[in-house]
Image (cartoon, rainbow, N blue to C red; front, side):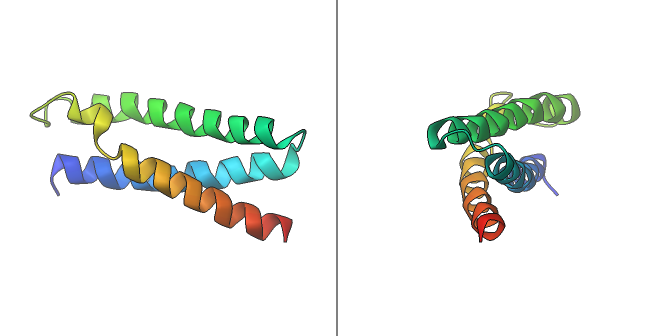
Length: 94
């Protein structure tokens, strides 16, 4: 598998994981709606930035443009994060 495809798939999986974690945080720590959303967003951003350093260590010499390490999969990460956040949160409060 090509390095950029691997990065994309890793970001997809991490988006799913961060969405589920954010939903559990939103369910069990419910002070207000805005603070809950910001906590979930903070979790997603922390996981995304952490993934950058892990991916950089693994794929730095295999990618032609080094800036692609940061930008590859950013859209699918946040889309999968919000979808699984909503999906898991709906199941947990139901």
